[in-house]
Length: 78
Ligand SMILES: [Zn+2]
Image 1 (spheres, protein in one colour):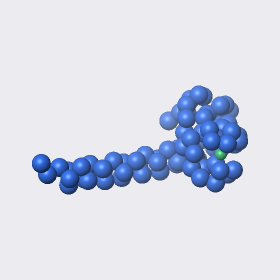
Image 2 (tube, rainbow, N blue to C red):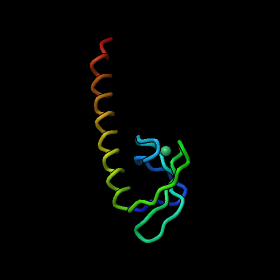
Image 3 (cartoon, rainbow, N blue to C red):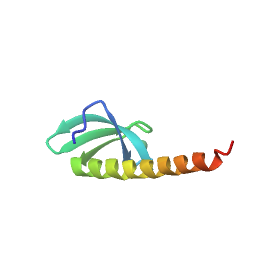
Image 4 (cartoon, protein in one colour):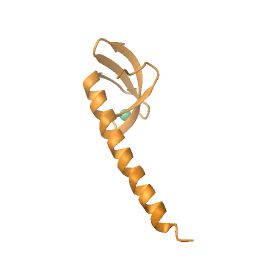
């Protein structure tokens, strides 16, 4: 799994103190330079950290989607 420069990834911003979209700006070896789209502060992160976040968010998104599907079936009475 590669993170292309110019794409956006969810990562925890140490300035905003929340998970925010980060734009990938640079890649050197296993490290990526990312910039928070909320406060514009930059960070250097290891590829593994980005991957872990990616997986965590995919997992959470899947749960949210599953809940939405369940809810829409539950309300689909007519
Ligand atoms: Zn930020």
